[in-house]
Length: 254
Image (tube, rainbow, N blue to C red; front, top):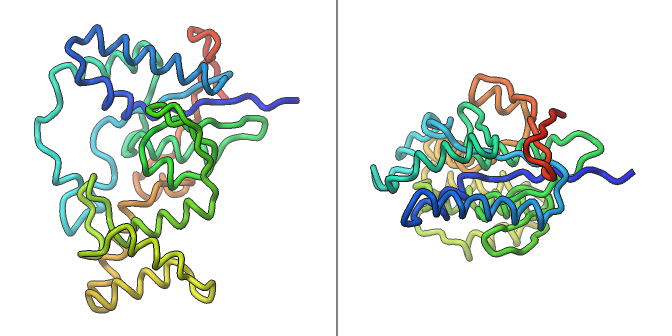
C-alpha cells in the first residue's frame, strides 16, 4: 500500500515572501496561491503548517550576543500580524511554544510514523541543507534531496562559521569555503565535533573555546527528537495535527 504524503510547511517563509504586498488582501491571496501550489506540486494527501509565535529557546541559549541582535526592531510591515493571524485561521497552521517554525518541520519530519512520507516545504537554507529528506523549495519551485551525511556536514560548517542572518557568531574570519574545506578534509579518524571543538579551543583557549563551541552548536542545531524539545523548552512535543490536502475543511490527527 502506498504511503500517504504529508506536506510539512514552514509558514514563517510564507510570511516573509508575502508580507510586503501593498495590501492585506493581496498578501492573503499570495499566501493562498503559494499553499495551493505546494499541495499540488507535492501531491500531498495531508498537510501541516507551522509558525513561530513568541521567543524561541535560542534567545535564552545565546550568551555572547543576543539572538537575532542584528535585525531592526519594528521592521515588520503593518500587515504582518494580520497576515499571520489569517494563516493560522484560514489554513489551521499552528506553533509549538518555545520553537521556531523550522524546528517544527525538522522534528516532525524526523519522527514521522510508518505509513507516511514527508515533503519538507521551505526555501530556508537551514531546513534545506540540514534536515535530511525530500524538500520542495516553494520559492524556486524545485525539489532537493538532502542526505543525512550532507545534513551533518552543513551543521558542523555552521558551527564553525556561525549564521550572520540570525546574528550567530562563529569563528571570527572563518567563511563558508574554509568551513567546507575543514569538514571535507575530515579523514574519519576523528569526528566532526572533535575537529570543530579543537578549532574553537585553538582560537579562544580551553574554557572559553568549549563555552563558545557549545553555544554556537546549540544555536545552529535544528532539533530532531521529542527529548530535545523537553530539554530545551521544558515542554513535550505535541502530537502532529494534520489536515486533508484534498479537502481543507476535513481534518484528522495521526
